Amino acid sequence: MAQTHLPAAYGFLASAHTSGGRMPAAVFATLGRQTLLAERLRAQTVDAVLVHPGSDADGAYTTDGDSLLLFAGEIYNREEIHGTLGTEESASDAVLVTGLIEKYGLHAFRMINGRYAALAVSGTRVLAATDHAGSVPLYVRVEPGRVLAATEVKALAGAGPAGRCAPVLGARRVRGLPGLHQVPAGAVVDIGVDTGSAAVHRTWLPPVHRCLTEPDDAVNAVRAALDKAVVRRLPAAGRPLVVLSGGIDSSAVAALTAGASATRTDTLSMGTDVSNEFPQARVVAEHLGSDHREMTVESGELLALLPHTVHAAESLDPEVIEYLLPLTAMYRCIGGPPRRVLTGYGADIPLGGMHREDRLPNLDAAVALDMDSFDGLNEMSPVLSAVSGHWSTHPYWDREVLELLTSLESGLKRRFGRDKWVLRASVSDLLPTETVTRPKLGVHEGSGTTASFSLLVRRAGAGEEDIASVKAQVVRHLFDRTVVGGEQPDDIDIEDVIDKIVGGGGT
Ligand code: IOT
Ligand code: MG
Ligand code: MG
Image 1 (cartoon, rainbow, N blue to C red):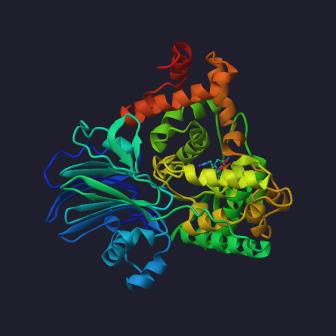
Image 2: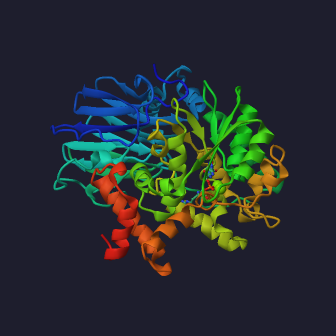
Image 3: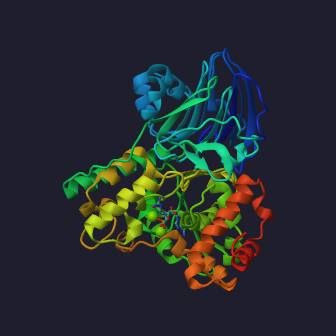
């Protein structure tokens, strides 16, 4: 049986070919069972591996002799899709996507509000698609006669020489892995397998307009949209788990979860021996009556997980890695059977929360820049929690919530001297005043991660002015070894890496 509270699959690796060729080994950081498919379609053959949390992957693919669809992740606007297709309520997400493709062709992906990567093979064509945020990363390698695709690029690292690989114009190439491209966020790549042609079509773009909405209307709209996004993400069975810092973003998610859930809510906070936000999270947990757990990670152990974070996120951005490191450590400590985890991640991007900027022109410039530059950072990747079997989902990056938040004029984001004002006002009846008015603190600050990483770099002998560049080199080095080179993160000693980079002026 598939797990009813989890997606049917977390990821996949696939080879669609008209000529032949071996599929690379199924190397995933994602933990799960693997199901192998070998389908001889009319015009091509598909070999695939689905990685999934339940005992089967039945809801993650469809096949009918001429076409095959692979789907990792989940859809949040299932009801609307049922409305247009007339499908059964029990239809799997893969069945819904197949129905949308039959009706709309590659434009199907414009219709979906979800957290997914999909591969649709039909005739001699392959469509490779991500959700609007590219929140389940997807990579492709195109050569005449064969297309490879995978939700983790490390699974394609052993695909052989890139000599015959075709370019995918408009898609980012991957460091150290010639021939590989990442499918852009909110895009579908239309590939002709026999010719190796590839064209990128956009299915979503961040809004660039801003709405001069009445403050009360904006507050009500944010509350309604966020509530809907949270409800759509609750588990069908079992308790929801919210990762809670006690900041406004995750506290709002926890409050809406507790209000809508048929069961009690579990909340979880992480901290380190250096720093934590435990008192602030406890205030929220007590107010909501959640079953709350705190976990403390020793900062040496935290930093030792840098290779694991890069291995899971496949990201080269050193700042993003600092945000994701404490979250990686936390997900690893959850333990037990696979859980559905709701986060407050991503709220600061459309609301400009990271910028502590009170001048409205600058605030909107920061929002516009961040909404233009998130693609490829992989900060929302499900692999971060899936390395321990858990499924994470981010209500603020629900397509409807994200569009609404992004498009509000900056005076609603910064108002009465407060950042993220519209969000704070929208949940002020659900949370203690001290939570609603609490200033922003980033996870990398609250856990002491940035400070601990800097200290390690300084101890290795780096000067103050070199810290940022050393960190960037460390992240690149870890990417080269764990993602490109296939080394296990457990086998890498982070202090050794830093010593070599600082001592040798590089590696
Ligand atoms: P922050 O907003 O502090 O945390 C993101 C989420 O991680 C929280 O909402 C919460 O669900 C979880 N979390 C954070 N700290 C803890 C903790 N101590 N215990 C348990 N859960 C916790 C960075 C940031 O400030 O995180 N993320 C930004 C965006 C980064 C910038 N990216 C970009 N420009 N593309 C964010 O919007 O989340
Ligand atoms: Mg936040
Ligand atoms: Mg925070």
